[in-house]
Image (tube, rainbow, N blue to C red; front, side):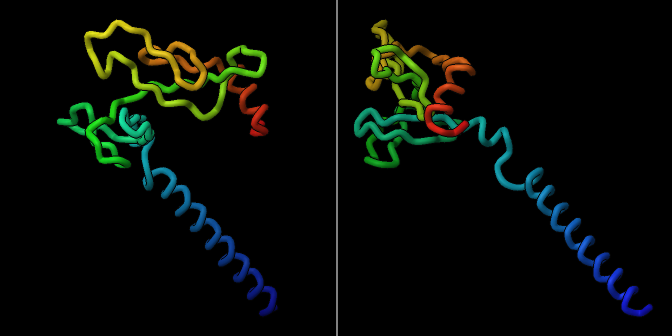
Length: 146
């Protein structure tokens, strides 16, 4: 009788510890780490000197160009993301890793010259639209991620 009670107590302790661990993990997920807001304010930048892409969270008082963390030049501009590439058939198709592109108007506000992606030749505009969900799904499938 004593052994049965001791076995039940052991199971209760194991269940209690498992619930505690699950609760702690849930609390960390909800309250710890980066919030959705923290992740949403990070912006992609590109150094116009060394062409190194970098992420930056804009702060009050920031003025472009920003200091590049790689070459230390004051040449970092917020970039647009180009999710296009040219396939072997010469047709544009979506890709998963974007190319960072600085719009000509970010460097020279008076410029009316169009900006093209150096990787694929696709025109890049402000708030550059991403390929459709279907095109991105095809890129994921091609990369073996689906």
